[in-house]
Image 1 (spheres, rainbow, N blue to C red):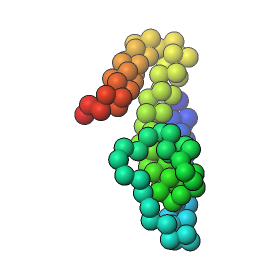
Image 2 (spheres, rainbow, N blue to C red):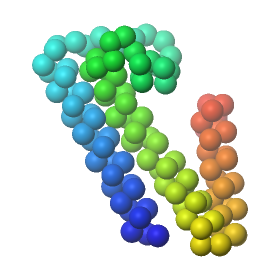
Image 3 (spheres, helix red, strand yellow):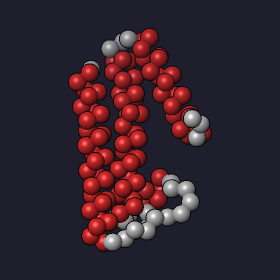
Image 4 (cartoon, rainbow, N blue to C red):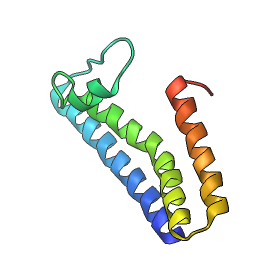
Amino acid sequence: MEVFISKLLWGGVVLSGLLLVAGLGLLWVTGDTSCPYGVMTFDWVLGGDPFLEPSHVIFLGFLVLIMTPVLRIVASTVVYAWMHDWLYTMLTGVVLVILVVSMTLGIG
């Protein structure tokens, strides 16, 4: 389990780094420093106008970096359930629910 989780975390950090470098490369090539004002939404990140603006790619890199620990908790919950370790399944499930609710409501 530890190997799977470590590969998941490593992959998330590497993907985030690649997106950040790609966004900075686009910024350097295009010189486009525009960034939208106000709240950035998932709709803007995944299908903005136009999609491959440097700010989109950089923000997506940060989003992947932020979501990597959340995916670790999801993976841990699934692995504990698969191993029939119900105590840890419940504990990581509660942590996941608290994390999702606090991210959704903007608490913390």
